[in-house]
Length: 287
Image 1 (cartoon, rainbow, N blue to C red):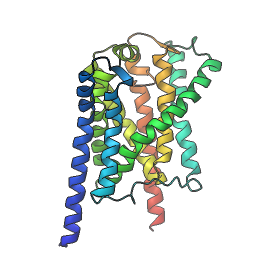
Image 2: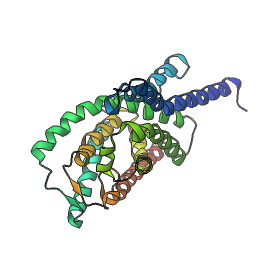
Image 3: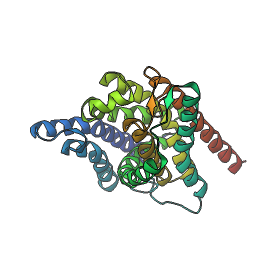
Image 4: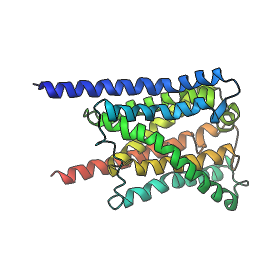
């Protein structure tokens, strides 16, 4: 039998998760409404996009500070000495997979690398990495540091955690893909309509969720995931959008470093390997 305190705690946790999800999913549409009140503001640097990015974190701060969630499970400590391996892995996952995908694409004649000048691209990558690191403190404090952390308290199975966290995370991106992201950028990545692009991106994010979730659970910290996410944004997006690589038309859905099916399969496999490592570690620590 559930004692009243425990039942009350569970009810509060469910309420707070629902409140967070509602505000997170509406944050982008609130931002779009704000931009439409100021017609001169639009695109990726508008006040509305700032609202989309910041509002979920603001809700998390309120829930943790004033609605009983607390900060103990936010996993804000870097735990660097215990996590050197996971920090190193967070730095190399996206570069290694991207390198493999580019090699496969080159061998198949699907990717032209003639525009990829390392002396130009590497400085760009490190400049973007700093910006993306800051941006992804906002994202990962929310999606792993709050939502995933709270879902873990409900003893959900791994698939349910991946689906709930991944679907909410991808749905939060819906206004970004439908409104904020320039159409030219979408067509550079994948020549489809906005909604079709969102569906492909959502599928990709579900696979990424496995990697992000397992790295978060293995490290007990958001910081390796912040780095992982920052490397992803600083690496694969400019490669494609800034035309450092050129993908043969029609092959983007297969080999794109951003959303290609082959690429996504690699990330799913890596996520499942990390899951296996976590399960084995847990089994070994509790004989």
